[in-house]
Image 1 (cartoon, protein in one colour):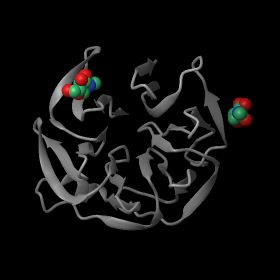
Image 2 (cartoon, helix red, strand yellow):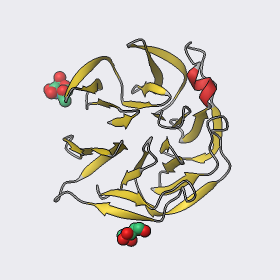
Image 3 (cartoon, protein in one colour):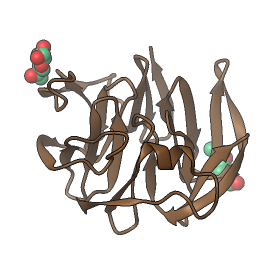
Length: 223
Ligand SMILES: *[C@@H]1O[C@H](CO)[C@@H](O)[C@H](O)[C@H]1NC(C)=O
Ligand SMILES: *[C@@H]1O[C@H](CO)[C@@H](O)[C@H](O)[C@H]1NC(C)=O
C-alpha cells in the first residue's frame, strides 16, 4: 500500500491493483508488483521491473527498469533497480514524462533495496537493513549531496508527503521516526509502535493516517 497526496493505492499478492474510494477498495486495471502515489503522480512497477505511469486513468509504459519506485517527494521521483542502484528523476522531468522514452534518470551513488521521499528528504534501507538519509535533496536536484547513516535497522522505510517516516524491521515490528523538523530532517529516535502481537511487513503514512499490512496480508488502517 502507498498513501500520498490524499490518495491510497495498493497491490495484492496476485498483482491486482486497487484504489481506496469512499471507504472501499476499487480495482484498477493492470497488474503491478509495487505502486506509488504522491505529488509526482501515480507510478508503479511490475514483476519484470517495467515502469508504468497512470495517465488519464490508464497505465503507460515508461523508460527504464526499477523494482521499487516512490512518488512521495516534492514532485520528484526516487527508486531502486534490480542491482540495488539508486535513481531519481527531477520534478520537471517527472512532470513532463508522458512518452515511453521518458523520464531521464539520475544515478545516486550507493546501493539500496528501498528508497522513499517526502517533505523533508529521502530515506532508504540497504540489503543489510542499514538506514540512510539523503541530504540536500531538492525537486530540481534530486540527486542531493551525501548519505547520512541513521542508527537502527529496518527492512523497509516509507516517508510521508507530510514528512513523517515509518519503517518495518526484520522482526516484523513497526517504528516511527520522532523529532523530524525542517531544521532536523533526520529526526532524533525511533519509537516502536505495537498493535497487540501483530506482525507487519509494510507501513505507509499520509495526512496523519497509517496504513499497515501484516505478514499474512491483512490491512490495518489507523486514523
Ligand atoms: C490470487 O489468486 C489465487 C489463484 O487464482 C486466488 O485463489 C486468490 O484468492 C487470489 N488472491 C487474492 C488476494 O485475490
Ligand atoms: C523519542 O523522542 C521523543 C521526543 O524527543 C521522546 O518523547 C520519546 O520518549 C523518545 N522515544 C524513545 C524510545 O527514546
